[in-house]
Amino acid sequence: MSRQTLPQVPYLRSVSVNDHQIQRFEAHFPVPSGMSYNSYVLLDEKIAVLDTMDRFFVEDWLRNLEEELAGRTPDYLVVHHMEPDHSSGIQAAMEKYPNLVLVSSAKAFSMMKQFIGDEYEGRRMVVQEGATLPLGKSTLKFIAAPMVHWPEVLLSYDMTNRVLFSADAFGKFGATDVMEDWDDEARRYYIGIVGKYGMQVQNVLKKAAELEIDAICPLHGPVLTPPLDHFLSLYRAWSSYAPEKKGVTLAYTSVYGHTEEAVLLLKEKLEQAGQTVALWNLAYDDIWGAVADAFRYDRLVLATTTYNMGIFPPMREFLQSLTDRNFQNRTVGLIENGSWAPAAAKGMLDCLSAAKGLTVLEPVVTLKSALNEESKEKLDLLARAVLKS
Image (cartoon, rainbow, N blue to C red; front, side, top):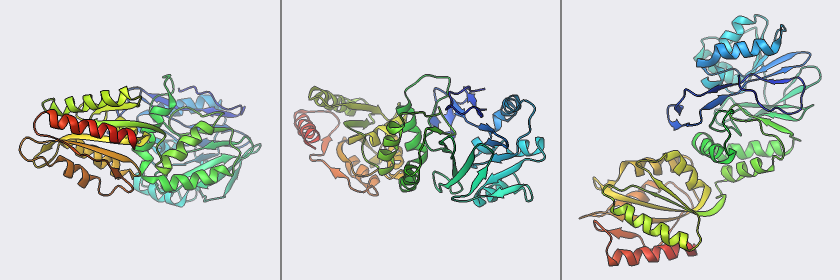
Protein backbone atom coordinates (compact mmCIF):
# COMPACT_ATOMS: atom_id res chain seq x y z
CA MET A 1 0.00 0.00 0.00
CA SER A 2 1.11 3.55 -0.67
CA ARG A 3 0.88 5.33 2.70
CA GLN A 4 0.46 8.98 1.87
CA THR A 5 0.62 12.02 4.07
CA LEU A 6 -3.01 13.07 4.06
CA PRO A 7 -4.66 16.31 5.15
CA GLN A 8 -6.00 16.43 8.69
CA VAL A 9 -9.28 14.66 7.94
CA PRO A 10 -9.73 11.84 10.45
CA TYR A 11 -11.91 9.74 8.18
CA LEU A 12 -9.92 10.15 4.93
CA ARG A 13 -7.68 7.22 3.98
CA SER A 14 -5.39 6.42 1.06
CA VAL A 15 -5.74 3.00 -0.55
CA SER A 16 -3.19 3.74 -3.27
CA VAL A 17 -0.61 1.42 -4.81
CA ASN A 18 2.95 2.11 -6.01
CA ASP A 19 4.14 0.45 -9.21
CA HIS A 20 7.89 -0.14 -9.50
CA GLN A 21 7.58 -2.69 -12.32
CA ILE A 22 6.47 -0.21 -14.96
CA GLN A 23 9.11 1.17 -17.31
CA ARG A 24 6.98 3.37 -19.57
CA PHE A 25 3.71 4.99 -18.59
CA GLU A 26 1.09 4.55 -21.31
CA ALA A 27 3.78 2.48 -23.06
CA HIS A 28 5.33 5.80 -24.03
CA PHE A 29 6.74 7.96 -21.22
CA PRO A 30 9.83 6.69 -19.31
CA VAL A 31 9.13 6.54 -15.56
CA PRO A 32 12.40 5.63 -13.82
CA SER A 33 10.84 6.32 -10.41
CA GLY A 34 7.74 4.21 -11.10
CA MET A 35 4.14 5.36 -10.77
CA SER A 36 1.52 5.68 -8.09
CA TYR A 37 -2.14 4.90 -8.73
CA ASN A 38 -4.15 6.74 -6.12
CA SER A 39 -7.49 5.78 -4.65
CA TYR A 40 -9.05 7.25 -1.52
CA VAL A 41 -11.83 6.33 0.87
CA LEU A 42 -13.95 8.64 3.01
CA LEU A 43 -15.04 6.68 6.10
CA ASP A 44 -17.90 8.99 6.98
CA GLU A 45 -21.42 7.97 8.09
CA LYS A 46 -21.76 6.90 4.47
CA ILE A 47 -18.58 5.51 2.96
CA ALA A 48 -17.37 6.76 -0.42
CA VAL A 49 -14.51 5.07 -2.28
CA LEU A 50 -12.90 7.45 -4.74
CA ASP A 51 -11.63 5.74 -7.91
CA THR A 52 -10.15 2.29 -8.37
CA MET A 53 -6.92 0.92 -9.78
CA ASP A 54 -4.78 -0.18 -12.71
CA ARG A 55 -5.62 -3.75 -13.77
CA PHE A 56 -2.35 -5.20 -12.51
CA PHE A 57 -3.07 -4.02 -8.95
CA VAL A 58 -6.79 -4.56 -8.47
CA GLU A 59 -6.29 -7.40 -5.98
CA ASP A 60 -3.78 -5.33 -3.99
CA TRP A 61 -6.19 -2.42 -4.01
CA LEU A 62 -9.12 -4.52 -2.79
CA ARG A 63 -6.98 -5.85 0.09
CA ASN A 64 -5.93 -2.30 0.99
CA LEU A 65 -9.54 -1.18 0.87
CA GLU A 66 -10.76 -4.07 3.02
CA GLU A 67 -8.10 -3.28 5.60
CA GLU A 68 -9.21 0.34 5.84
CA LEU A 69 -12.90 -0.55 5.91
CA ALA A 70 -12.30 -2.74 8.99
CA GLY A 71 -15.50 -4.69 8.49
CA ARG A 72 -17.66 -1.85 7.19
CA THR A 73 -19.23 -1.86 3.73
CA PRO A 74 -18.82 1.01 1.25
CA ASP A 75 -21.91 2.82 0.01
CA TYR A 76 -20.57 4.65 -3.02
CA LEU A 77 -17.83 4.24 -5.60
CA VAL A 78 -17.06 7.62 -7.16
CA VAL A 79 -15.40 7.42 -10.58
CA HIS A 80 -13.74 10.69 -11.50
CA HIS A 81 -11.96 9.40 -14.60
CA MET A 82 -12.47 6.32 -16.79
CA GLU A 83 -8.90 5.87 -18.00
CA PRO A 84 -8.07 2.21 -17.30
CA ASP A 85 -5.25 2.94 -14.85
CA HIS A 86 -7.98 4.30 -12.53
CA SER A 87 -11.09 2.35 -13.50
CA SER A 88 -9.98 -1.26 -13.93
CA GLY A 89 -11.25 -2.20 -10.47
CA ILE A 90 -14.86 -1.13 -11.05
CA GLN A 91 -16.19 -4.54 -12.00
CA ALA A 92 -14.39 -6.32 -9.14
CA ALA A 93 -15.66 -3.77 -6.60
CA MET A 94 -19.23 -4.01 -7.86
CA GLU A 95 -19.11 -7.80 -7.58
CA LYS A 96 -17.53 -7.75 -4.11
CA TYR A 97 -20.00 -5.22 -2.68
CA PRO A 98 -23.49 -5.96 -4.08
CA ASN A 99 -25.08 -2.79 -2.62
CA LEU A 100 -22.38 -0.45 -3.89
CA VAL A 101 -23.70 2.51 -5.91
CA LEU A 102 -21.58 3.93 -8.73
CA VAL A 103 -21.36 7.72 -8.92
CA SER A 104 -20.04 9.33 -12.10
CA SER A 105 -20.83 11.44 -15.15
CA ALA A 106 -23.14 10.34 -17.95
CA LYS A 107 -20.18 10.19 -20.34
CA ALA A 108 -18.28 7.95 -17.93
CA PHE A 109 -21.14 5.46 -17.83
CA SER A 110 -21.17 5.23 -21.63
CA MET A 111 -17.42 4.55 -21.47
CA MET A 112 -18.04 1.82 -18.87
CA LYS A 113 -20.22 0.09 -21.45
CA GLN A 114 -17.30 0.22 -23.86
CA PHE A 115 -14.65 -0.92 -21.39
CA ILE A 116 -16.60 -3.31 -19.17
CA GLY A 117 -19.75 -4.13 -21.12
CA ASP A 118 -22.03 -2.80 -18.36
CA GLU A 119 -23.47 0.63 -17.50
CA TYR A 120 -24.81 -0.63 -14.12
CA GLU A 121 -28.43 0.42 -14.63
CA GLY A 122 -30.16 0.39 -11.25
CA ARG A 123 -26.89 0.73 -9.32
CA ARG A 124 -25.72 4.12 -10.46
CA MET A 125 -26.02 7.80 -9.73
CA VAL A 126 -25.36 10.16 -12.64
CA VAL A 127 -23.96 13.51 -11.51
CA GLN A 128 -22.95 16.70 -13.26
CA GLU A 129 -21.56 20.15 -12.46
CA GLY A 130 -22.75 21.35 -9.07
CA ALA A 131 -24.31 18.05 -7.92
CA THR A 132 -23.63 17.03 -4.32
CA LEU A 133 -23.24 13.75 -2.47
CA PRO A 134 -23.90 14.03 1.31
CA LEU A 135 -21.91 11.52 3.35
CA GLY A 136 -22.61 12.71 6.90
CA LYS A 137 -20.01 15.10 8.27
CA SER A 138 -18.86 15.89 4.76
CA THR A 139 -20.47 16.54 1.40
CA LEU A 140 -18.83 16.06 -1.96
CA LYS A 141 -19.58 18.67 -4.61
CA PHE A 142 -18.84 17.74 -8.22
CA ILE A 143 -17.01 19.89 -10.73
CA ALA A 144 -17.11 19.11 -14.45
CA ALA A 145 -13.63 19.02 -16.00
CA PRO A 146 -14.14 17.89 -19.61
CA MET A 147 -10.92 17.28 -21.56
CA VAL A 148 -8.71 17.43 -18.49
CA HIS A 149 -7.78 15.26 -20.16
CA TRP A 150 -10.71 13.00 -21.20
CA PRO A 151 -14.25 14.23 -21.90
CA GLU A 152 -15.95 12.44 -18.97
CA VAL A 153 -13.74 13.80 -16.18
CA LEU A 154 -15.18 15.03 -12.90
CA LEU A 155 -13.41 16.55 -9.91
CA SER A 156 -14.97 16.52 -6.46
CA TYR A 157 -14.59 18.89 -3.53
CA ASP A 158 -15.09 17.96 0.10
CA MET A 159 -16.95 21.07 1.21
CA THR A 160 -16.40 20.43 4.92
CA ASN A 161 -12.69 19.67 4.89
CA ARG A 162 -11.79 21.74 1.83
CA VAL A 163 -10.08 18.89 -0.01
CA LEU A 164 -10.08 18.81 -3.82
CA PHE A 165 -10.01 15.37 -5.46
CA SER A 166 -8.48 16.43 -8.74
CA ALA A 167 -8.48 13.34 -11.00
CA ASP A 168 -5.38 13.47 -13.24
CA ALA A 169 -4.86 17.19 -12.66
CA PHE A 170 -1.91 17.98 -10.35
CA GLY A 171 -0.52 14.50 -10.87
CA LYS A 172 3.08 13.54 -11.54
CA PHE A 173 5.23 10.67 -12.70
CA GLY A 174 6.94 8.69 -9.94
CA ALA A 175 5.89 6.47 -7.05
CA THR A 176 5.10 8.19 -3.77
CA ASP A 177 7.77 6.23 -1.86
CA VAL A 178 10.49 7.92 -3.94
CA MET A 179 11.71 11.30 -2.73
CA GLU A 180 12.14 13.65 -5.69
CA ASP A 181 11.35 17.19 -6.74
CA TRP A 182 7.68 17.61 -7.61
CA ASP A 183 8.13 20.25 -10.28
CA ASP A 184 10.21 18.33 -12.83
CA GLU A 185 8.17 15.14 -12.96
CA ALA A 186 4.86 17.01 -12.65
CA ARG A 187 5.91 19.24 -15.56
CA ARG A 188 6.91 16.26 -17.70
CA TYR A 189 3.61 14.58 -16.79
CA TYR A 190 1.49 17.68 -17.45
CA ILE A 191 3.08 18.60 -20.78
CA GLY A 192 3.09 15.00 -22.00
CA ILE A 193 -0.38 13.96 -20.86
CA VAL A 194 -2.49 17.11 -20.50
CA GLY A 195 -0.53 19.74 -22.44
CA LYS A 196 -2.80 19.94 -25.46
CA TYR A 197 -5.75 21.03 -23.32
CA GLY A 198 -4.56 24.30 -21.84
CA MET A 199 -7.85 26.14 -22.36
CA GLN A 200 -9.79 23.41 -20.56
CA VAL A 201 -7.30 23.46 -17.67
CA GLN A 202 -7.67 27.23 -17.45
CA ASN A 203 -11.44 26.78 -17.14
CA VAL A 204 -10.99 24.37 -14.24
CA LEU A 205 -8.49 26.70 -12.56
CA LYS A 206 -11.13 29.45 -12.67
CA LYS A 207 -13.57 27.15 -10.89
CA ALA A 208 -10.93 26.15 -8.35
CA ALA A 209 -10.17 29.82 -7.64
CA GLU A 210 -13.69 30.14 -6.20
CA LEU A 211 -13.00 27.38 -3.63
CA GLU A 212 -11.07 27.40 -0.37
CA ILE A 213 -8.68 24.49 -0.85
CA ASP A 214 -6.53 23.09 1.93
CA ALA A 215 -5.32 20.00 0.09
CA ILE A 216 -5.31 18.46 -3.40
CA CYS A 217 -5.59 14.69 -3.81
CA PRO A 218 -4.62 13.69 -7.37
CA LEU A 219 -4.81 10.25 -9.01
CA HIS A 220 -1.03 10.12 -9.48
CA GLY A 221 1.69 11.37 -7.16
CA PRO A 222 1.64 12.87 -3.68
CA VAL A 223 -1.19 14.66 -1.94
CA LEU A 224 -0.46 18.38 -2.14
CA THR A 225 -0.76 20.37 1.08
CA PRO A 226 -0.22 24.08 1.84
CA PRO A 227 1.28 26.25 0.66
CA LEU A 228 -0.55 25.48 -2.61
CA ASP A 229 0.29 28.72 -4.45
CA HIS A 230 3.42 27.20 -5.98
CA PHE A 231 1.53 24.31 -7.59
CA LEU A 232 -1.31 26.54 -8.77
CA SER A 233 1.07 29.09 -10.27
CA LEU A 234 2.85 26.38 -12.25
CA TYR A 235 -0.45 25.10 -13.58
CA ARG A 236 -1.41 28.62 -14.60
CA ALA A 237 1.88 28.98 -16.52
CA TRP A 238 1.71 25.55 -18.13
CA SER A 239 -1.92 25.87 -19.20
CA SER A 240 -1.41 29.35 -20.66
CA TYR A 241 1.73 28.19 -22.54
CA ALA A 242 3.77 30.91 -20.89
CA PRO A 243 7.41 30.11 -20.11
CA GLU A 244 8.19 29.54 -16.45
CA LYS A 245 11.71 30.92 -16.61
CA LYS A 246 14.23 32.63 -18.81
CA GLY A 247 16.58 30.09 -20.31
CA VAL A 248 17.52 28.25 -23.48
CA THR A 249 16.69 24.70 -24.48
CA LEU A 250 19.22 23.30 -26.97
CA ALA A 251 17.65 20.29 -28.71
CA TYR A 252 19.72 18.56 -31.35
CA THR A 253 20.60 15.44 -33.31
CA SER A 254 24.02 14.68 -34.74
CA VAL A 255 25.06 11.75 -36.90
CA TYR A 256 28.84 12.03 -37.02
CA GLY A 257 29.42 14.64 -34.32
CA HIS A 258 29.80 17.82 -36.38
CA THR A 259 26.37 19.24 -35.55
CA GLU A 260 26.97 18.36 -31.90
CA GLU A 261 30.26 20.28 -32.02
CA ALA A 262 28.39 23.40 -33.13
CA VAL A 263 25.75 22.94 -30.44
CA LEU A 264 28.34 22.52 -27.69
CA LEU A 265 30.15 25.64 -28.87
CA LEU A 266 26.87 27.59 -28.74
CA LYS A 267 26.15 26.19 -25.26
CA GLU A 268 29.55 27.40 -24.07
CA LYS A 269 28.94 30.91 -25.44
CA LEU A 270 25.51 31.15 -23.80
CA GLU A 271 26.66 29.84 -20.44
CA GLN A 272 29.62 32.21 -20.42
CA ALA A 273 27.06 34.98 -20.78
CA GLY A 274 25.19 33.71 -17.71
CA GLN A 275 22.33 31.92 -19.46
CA THR A 276 20.63 28.79 -18.11
CA VAL A 277 20.96 26.12 -20.81
CA ALA A 278 19.19 22.75 -21.00
CA LEU A 279 20.95 20.42 -23.46
CA TRP A 280 19.10 17.48 -25.07
CA ASN A 281 20.47 14.96 -27.57
CA LEU A 282 17.17 13.81 -29.06
CA ALA A 283 18.59 10.56 -30.41
CA TYR A 284 19.61 9.33 -26.95
CA ASP A 285 17.95 11.39 -24.21
CA ASP A 286 14.37 11.28 -22.95
CA ILE A 287 12.46 13.20 -25.60
CA TRP A 288 9.74 14.03 -23.05
CA GLY A 289 12.24 15.75 -20.83
CA ALA A 290 13.24 17.82 -23.85
CA VAL A 291 9.60 18.62 -24.61
CA ALA A 292 9.03 19.71 -21.02
CA ASP A 293 12.08 21.99 -21.07
CA ALA A 294 10.98 23.53 -24.38
CA PHE A 295 7.82 24.64 -22.58
CA ARG A 296 9.73 25.54 -19.42
CA TYR A 297 12.11 28.09 -20.96
CA ASP A 298 11.47 31.11 -23.17
CA ARG A 299 13.96 30.26 -25.96
CA LEU A 300 14.62 27.15 -28.02
CA VAL A 301 17.50 26.40 -30.39
CA LEU A 302 17.11 23.47 -32.76
CA ALA A 303 19.99 21.78 -34.57
CA THR A 304 19.80 18.81 -36.90
CA THR A 305 21.14 17.15 -40.00
CA THR A 306 19.56 17.08 -43.44
CA TYR A 307 18.33 13.51 -43.85
CA ASN A 308 16.53 12.17 -46.93
CA MET A 309 16.05 15.80 -47.97
CA GLY A 310 14.26 16.42 -44.69
CA ILE A 311 15.27 16.27 -41.02
CA PHE A 312 16.63 13.51 -38.83
CA PRO A 313 13.72 11.38 -37.48
CA PRO A 314 14.16 12.08 -33.72
CA MET A 315 13.99 15.82 -34.45
CA ARG A 316 10.80 15.30 -36.44
CA GLU A 317 9.27 13.37 -33.53
CA PHE A 318 10.30 16.09 -31.10
CA LEU A 319 8.78 18.89 -33.17
CA GLN A 320 5.59 16.92 -33.71
CA SER A 321 5.37 16.39 -29.95
CA LEU A 322 5.66 20.16 -29.43
CA THR A 323 3.02 21.16 -31.96
CA ASP A 324 0.66 18.40 -30.78
CA ARG A 325 0.73 20.17 -27.39
CA ASN A 326 0.13 23.69 -28.69
CA PHE A 327 3.72 24.93 -28.44
CA GLN A 328 3.58 28.69 -28.96
CA ASN A 329 4.93 32.15 -28.12
CA ARG A 330 8.62 31.25 -28.04
CA THR A 331 11.82 32.47 -29.66
CA VAL A 332 13.52 29.87 -31.85
CA GLY A 333 17.01 29.63 -33.34
CA LEU A 334 18.03 27.17 -36.05
CA ILE A 335 21.22 25.29 -36.93
CA GLU A 336 21.24 22.97 -39.93
CA ASN A 337 23.83 20.64 -41.45
CA GLY A 338 24.00 19.26 -44.97
CA SER A 339 26.97 18.19 -47.04
CA TRP A 340 25.56 18.98 -50.49
CA ALA A 341 21.95 20.24 -50.17
CA PRO A 342 21.17 21.62 -46.69
CA ALA A 343 17.41 21.46 -46.15
CA ALA A 344 17.05 20.88 -42.41
CA ALA A 345 16.17 24.48 -41.47
CA LYS A 346 13.27 24.53 -43.92
CA GLY A 347 12.21 21.09 -42.67
CA MET A 348 12.18 22.25 -39.05
CA LEU A 349 10.19 25.37 -39.91
CA ASP A 350 7.71 23.26 -41.86
CA CYS A 351 7.23 21.04 -38.80
CA LEU A 352 6.65 24.14 -36.66
CA SER A 353 4.22 25.77 -39.07
CA ALA A 354 1.26 25.01 -36.77
CA ALA A 355 2.90 26.72 -33.79
CA LYS A 356 1.56 30.22 -33.09
CA GLY A 357 3.55 33.27 -32.09
CA LEU A 358 7.05 32.00 -32.84
CA THR A 359 9.90 34.44 -33.41
CA VAL A 360 12.63 32.88 -35.58
CA LEU A 361 16.05 34.37 -34.98
CA GLU A 362 18.56 35.40 -37.61
CA PRO A 363 20.91 34.16 -38.77
CA VAL A 364 20.10 30.54 -39.49
CA VAL A 365 23.44 28.77 -39.10
CA THR A 366 24.27 26.38 -41.96
CA LEU A 367 27.06 23.85 -41.63
CA LYS A 368 28.27 22.19 -44.80
CA SER A 369 29.58 18.96 -43.28
CA ALA A 370 31.58 20.58 -40.47
CA LEU A 371 32.24 23.86 -38.74
CA ASN A 372 34.49 26.34 -40.53
CA GLU A 373 35.36 29.97 -39.93
CA GLU A 374 32.29 31.24 -41.74
CA SER A 375 29.85 29.03 -39.82
CA LYS A 376 31.62 29.84 -36.54
CA GLU A 377 31.02 33.54 -37.21
CA LYS A 378 27.35 32.81 -37.92
CA LEU A 379 27.18 30.80 -34.70
CA ASP A 380 28.55 33.76 -32.78
CA LEU A 381 25.88 35.99 -34.35
CA LEU A 382 23.19 33.48 -33.41
CA ALA A 383 24.49 33.43 -29.82
CA ARG A 384 24.20 37.22 -29.68
CA ALA A 385 20.67 37.07 -31.09
CA VAL A 386 19.66 34.49 -28.49
CA LEU A 387 21.08 36.65 -25.72
CA LYS A 388 19.27 39.79 -26.98
CA SER A 389 15.91 38.08 -27.51
